[in-house]
Amino acid sequence: MELTVLGAGVTTPSRTRFGSSHLLSIGGGALLFDCGPATTYRLARAGVSLSTIDQLFFTHHHYDHDADFGCFVLCRWDHGAGQERPLHVFGPTRTATISERLFGKAGVFEFDLSARLNHPASLRTYQNRGGVLPRRPPALEVVDATPGTVCSGVDWVVTAAHAQHAQPWLDSLAYRVDSSEGSVVFTGDTEPCRSVVELARGADMMVCMCQDDEDVMKAKGVDAGSTGPAGAARMASEAGVRKLVLVHIGPGLEGQGPMQKAIESARSFFGGEVIFSEELLRIPVR
Image (cartoon, rainbow, N blue to C red; front, side):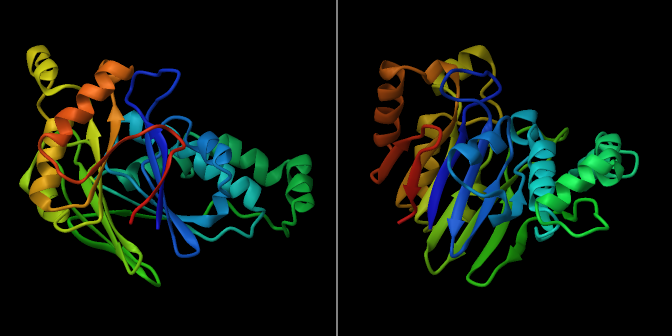
């Protein structure tokens, strides 16, 4: 089991980080967690075929976590040439609504889909890629998930718990993947909370947001619903996880000095391995 960090940043685009997205390679397939800006492009840079991803999990629906949803679905479908399997999409409340408003009969991409399903040149391109007519629209199976068991595969199971971030406007979930290859928790965006700690209990790895230094966030009045290096480390320590990966890193922690301070802050509360993520970084879960 291996984690690939696709998007390691926040809403502020920088030269090194933008948005949130993570790929978990497991067995012969892969699970995608969040689909922030440029996820599809980074998957290509990482050499990952979109056809290997059949499950997508959203932690919540801020745009830095879901803005590339349309691009990912359409690229996976268009280049799958009818050979791609249905895409299973899970997320908190409104995930099904967002999917319908993008890909439904009156959705944002209705006109694009209509052209690709009917224009002679588009149909010829589809056939040249190995597709067989008639061409069908993207096959999506979308579920508004709730805490508890979300789905399972041949050798893995995904469970979810509430995360505390932007309620009551947006629901948020944290996810845990368990398999014979290891266990990993994706906190999504959250402030330190009991439900996420319990979900992460004894996991091999916790992938946790690290927005900014806690004192800075508190002074700016933006600490509610977010976590910094100390809060992430406290949750990891209390849960007894073995490895802490800091993601969702804001511009205040960019640069060698702030980065080192964040790592030292986390290590003062957590005795396991601490990794300050970079995009396209590959990390073994165990």
